[in-house]
Amino acid sequence: MQPHLGYDNGGTCTLGSLLWFPDLAERIAAHLPPNEVPCGMRLVNKATAALFSKEEHKIVDTCKPVPLGAFAERWGRGRARELTLDGRRDLIRCTALSGDLPNLELATDACGLLPPLDCWLAAAQNGHIHICDWLKKRDRPFDKQRGAVALAARHGHRQTCDWLLREAGYPWSEEAVCEGLRRGDLDLANWLLQQRPAEPEAENDNNEHGGGRPELLGGVLAAAAHGFDLSTFRRLLWELLPDATPASEPSDGGNQATVPAALRALALRVGDEPLSEEDLGSVVAGAAGSKTSDWAAKMEWLEAEGYPKTPEATEKAAACKNSALQRLQWLRGRGYPLGEGAIKEAVSRGDMPALQYLLAEGAPSDVEAADLAARNGRLAALQVLHTTGRLVTAEGAAMHAAWGGHLPVLAWLVEESGLGVELHYDIFAQATQSGNVGMLEWLHQRGCPTEPDGKKHWSAVDYAVAGGHEPSIEWLVERGCSIPVGAAVKGHAQGPVAGRGYLAG
Image 1: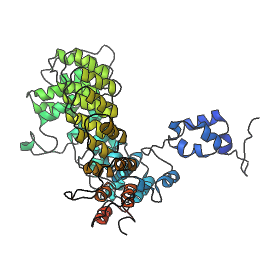
Image 2 (image 1 turned 30 degrees about the horizontal axis):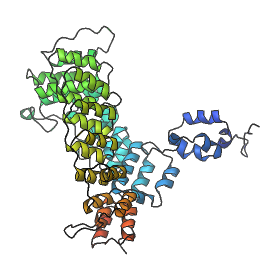
Image 3 (image 1 turned 45 degrees about the vertical axis):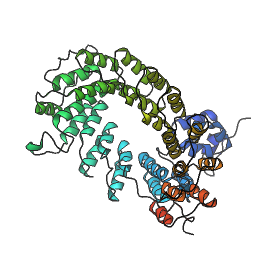
Image 4 (image 1 turned 90 degrees about the vertical axis):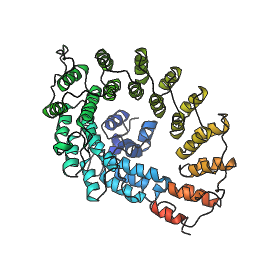
């Protein structure tokens, strides 16, 4: 029996009735913003909940707009207590990234924090000028790295770049020009270079706006190697460097763009001063990490032109999602050396095929690779580093795993690695800041000290308050951990969520 369409009192077919038809419901869902399915369609009735029952239909991405009611239901009424201080900051940043101002205001209120300074970066990344304006009106200082204009350029938001420079007074940076080139946008890069503040002639060769012109030109060429196909890149190189090999006319109808005025002026002012060996290596590395389909052809051409083979190229290749192994094999086949950065890139992304290849090739690494794996919860990466004889310090890895809240990593280090990890108070103190109560319980059951030995200045409660995770504070207090004088003050400094009701009596 087919379900009957329902009608409201006005004779209009209701959405709930329409969604009884699976094909129609799926078509509607395909045209909705991602979060409308988990926050809306799944809640219409049991039929739609069953229809949209895959894991992807249940995940809410706070970096995209969320219906205000659903957002308030999840994070209102003190629910931010479930997050650490870093987690609350991440929630605010993600909401700024979504561009949803009502939710951003709700998030800052629920978390009891001022918007983190890198909300400027989040807003600029997606071109949300209204969020930037909201931050400006609240007198929020710029992010420490002053990277918002560069990030807006990376994602092609020229209007946002313009607003940040003109309305917000954001400082100009060389990196913004390079980001425009990395995305293959010559016009944007040229426009950004035109916005470079004028400086006295005496300061032209070395100034606060990104260094001297030779360094700026080197960065420009490396970015161009990353962002443009070979035909366009050769043309740019020929016009920017007097001694470059003339570019032949492209036979494939490719982009025949010429160098805009501002970039040409940059090259002319640098004069005939040659690029440093480091600059030349950065150009090669830019091509090695390029997203263009002819990245290998660019590498071959640069080799023929005498550009150096440096470890930086393999590091950039190792950072390429979905193609790292292929690029590393190609580069190694042509004699490119390996540096420590390649293994770190593979570890940070959890790219096991690339990591195993690098280890087999004898790529160098230090203890930072193992610490990075432990801190990011990359258990498989940590295990392969250990089994291949790479340096893994027991205490350092355990501390990083505890700080990150990665219990499977910590459990392996303690129970299976054979590294002789001894549980001590410093590990427990790191765990109190992670927001993982299960890890605290696990450590407690194994006899890990929960109080300092008298030589430490901070108690476990102090550390938990600094982490800002209220359930962890509860757990410690319920188990009789001492509450030192001043802990409530520390809690107040993290916002009204941290330690509320547990430290003030």
